[in-house]
Each structure stands twice: as C-alpha cells, then as structure tokens.
Length: 394
Image (cartoon, rainbow, N blue to C red; front, side, top):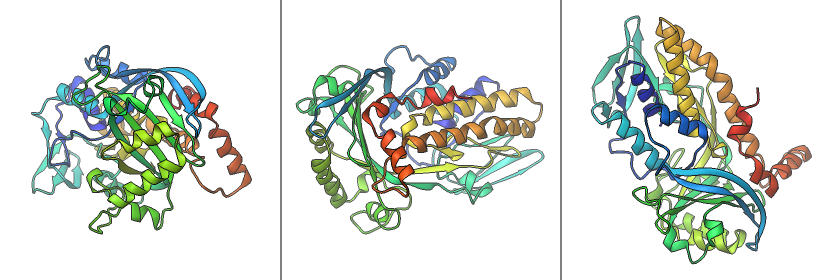
C-alpha cells in the first residue's frame, strides 16, 4: 500500500515512477478488512479516486457482548469498513501495470552522487534518482541500512478470517453483524465487522464478516509451535494461511467454545480458512539514507488496534512528496521528510502498545495490572477510536 501510494503521489508531482514487487504473483486475495477514516478517503480523493460510492460497508456503531452473548455496551461511532483487496485494486487501477514489476526480490542497494541502484535476485538492476523502501515489516532496504532494527514480538497473535454473510446469518443477529462487535475474554479481545464480499460485492446478503481474535502466546515455544505447518516446517515470523496446521486450527476452535459468546463461537466455526498473524512492533531510528527513504511498515510497524496502517502509509507518502517539492536536492528533502515523520511513527507505535496493554494472561506489577484492567473495560474499548484521538494531541 505504501509503495503504491508513494508512487501515485510522486507521479502526480511530476516524477517518473516504477514499482518493484517482491512477490512473483499478483497480490490478490491477501489481507482482510480495513477500517477507514476521513484522512484516508481525503487522500484517495486527492488522487482522483472515488470513495463516495462502492468504497465499503457503512458501520453505524460498536457493540460489546459478554460471555453469554448478551449486549453489555453500545457506542454510536460511524465508520466505513473496506477490504484490503478493494483498496489495492483501486490503487493498482490508478497506477496501471506498465510500471509495476513482479518477481523483483531486492538483494542490495548501491548509491552515489549521480543516482541509486536497486540490484535484484534475478540478475537485473535499475538506477534512478530516488529509491523508496516501502517493502513491509521484513524490509530488505531497512535490513541493509538498519540491520539492528528488527520487529519485536508483542506477546500475542491474531486469528483472522472471513465468513460469507449468508453462511453466518443464522447465527448472528443483524445488529451484531452490522456493527463493530467486541467480546473481551480475560486477557484477550475478539471483534467482528462486515466488509464487502467477493468482487467488492456490497449488496446485503452478499457481504463478508471479518474476524480478528487477539490471543496471548508465549514467545519462546508457543509461537514457534503455532508457526509450524503439518510437514513439521517452522516458518519464521509468519505463516501462509493455507499452511496453518490443522491441529492448531482445532485448538483455536476448542478455545472459542470455552471463551467466546455463543454467536461468535458459532460464526468462527463457519470460517473455512482462518489464518494466524503474530503481532509485532518496530521502530526505526532513521528513515533517510542519502537517496534512499523508508516508508510505511518498512519504517514503523504498528499493532492493528490503531487501525492506521494505511493512513500511516498515506501520511508518509504525502510528507515525502511535499519535502522533495520544497528542496532542490534529494538528500535535503529526505532529511526533512525524516525529521517530520520519525516522531509521529513513534506516537503510532506507543498508542498501539497502550491499546494492546491488557492482552496478557499475567502482569509484572499491580500498576500494570490496573492499567490493563482500565483498557479492558467494555466502555473503554468501545470509546477508543485510536487514530483520530491521538493524532490531535500535540
């Protein structure tokens, strides 16, 4: 997302831009739901993309359910939920395929006074005036310039998945399906909300229900077990959705039967291919290196509670382009970009940590336990909008 957004904004500013994608196949069918905010829609509108219709599913508010399935909290909070696939398709449609190159696994970057060169695993290279490392939390660009900056496991994982509206309709009331609905087992958090169905289908009865379930998992052994597929191979950092071991999925479903409200446990059982996502933090001490810049998750990885991954990418891209427009040299422009974005990246990470502070089974102090209990209250979870609140704080 950050790479496409940066490319579109740079091109609008007069740059000639090519995007080099590590994956060898089109990035479709990836990700799940995305909660949007006015900042995102405004940025997309500035790029000429229409977010006034068919952009996502309107959600009027939030609900909290207790373990028995009773509604114990309500909060009006209008938002629009879209899907990763739909947003990606919008950006790709604006960029076009002529300057989008698949199968380009970056090996290293070299640079000098006259340009910067990306060297790829297929033996090709490309030289340009500027290189933006928007290659995600496992960034090859960051690994070269900041090898010490590594993602830090947050202590819990997220189970995610999508269910067809027609499939879950018998087990979810309309009110629960159409709201951002929470359940708060001790030390955990479950939420579900509607998103567009396959093909960005927004018709009632054809949408999907997006699920996220945060569960603590011990780092040394438990996460390794969760990332081990049925062949015994241990996957580093994350595991592709189809490879999650059947026994791990069954354990998750058994836990749902013990911990979740009946509506949620029944709906979760209907998700055909739930997938597992360990949660990480990452803070880069720098974002600019001569003619090279980091953007998006390559620079700062923010836990999903803030619902701001794409917004952060939008802001990085817009700030980068503005800084380059202001200065006559790329080096100066990138240093200005870094100065403007480092503090905000740290604030995103800090806010997400705060919102996830209660996702633990045990605590190191009574003060930590008290803070966690405060953030775990249904009224607090329903109220915290994360992005808009903390971005307004100086």
